[in-house]
Image 1 (spheres, one colour):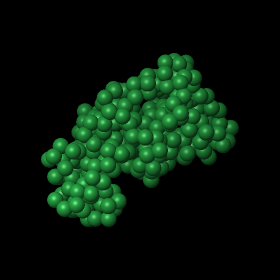
Image 2 (cartoon, rainbow, N blue to C red):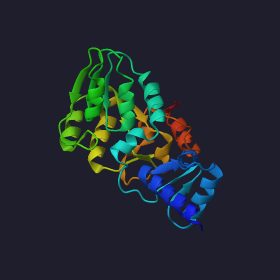
Image 3 (cartoon, rainbow, N blue to C red):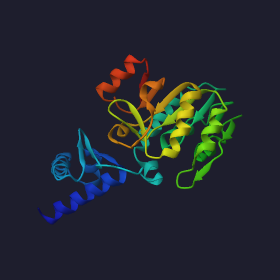
Length: 254
């Protein structure tokens, strides 16, 4: 193996570890090589046990921690913005909403800024800041421990406060979706708040881009059949589409 190949594969590994998942096209663009070259490298590295190969890309083997907030802000940004705009179109003026932690839900909040008279309960400081300019918007921020790294408010106080309300919509993001439709997260502190939203929203929207099907956090939040609508950027796997259809969960592809 030449030094150039070795350096390229090292960069592939670092990119995949940094983002959790990367498409072959993104890797090829980043490394200025062909997609075919990336696929050959990924096949070899997967055989060596360095990463996991997927159709269309590669992921790190066993992510135990979430990607840093700054990286998540820019990862698949256009896709998240499209998902957020699509979901925001379904929210009427005057609606009440729960919105949880996540960069996709923040993109959703950004698209709500022209809505009027919204009533929002959130455990995400960034969501509250984004919605502050919205006309006649009423904002309630839960109590709890503030995670300075991403603006999330977590802990039992946050979940208990959500339990005190009933909202028209609950809008949640997620860190991973397993092959059987289980919704997963990296941080156990976030789970109670997300589960409280699932229990107390009349209609639940799940917002997640296609890379969430490649990630395997360990903590269980719930199941995709518990939501009313799933907003994403690419068609999900066939078994997930079948689950959505069977349980009358509306699929929206941005």
